[in-house]
Amino acid sequence: MPEIPPEDSLIVYPSAFPIKVMGAQVEGFEAAIVAVAKQFDPGFDASRVERRPSKGGNYLGLTITVTATSREQLDELYRTLSSHPMVKVVL
Figure 1 (cartoon, rainbow, N blue to C red):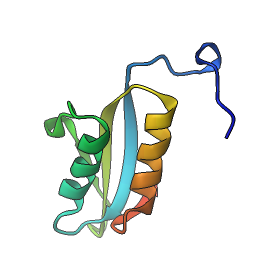
Figure 2: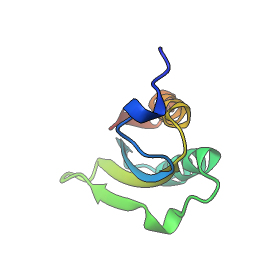
Figure 3: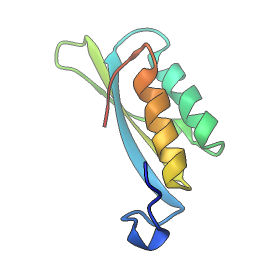
């Protein structure tokens, strides 16, 4: 992927960046997502995770807000979340 010059980026770093993660509502899902977030943002505040269970209660949507420091950090975070076995969708 070609490098995007900072002046062409739509994101100003560092910044608070929300990411939506959806998966089955099972034991350990939220803890697993928080652990991934902390890998990429050591100052991540787990108390600010927003939870939205599905109408039927089978799925859980989480919004995590990380401090984005670079495009590379965000790309790797998305790849890590997307490949996690408990995750269905990352937005």
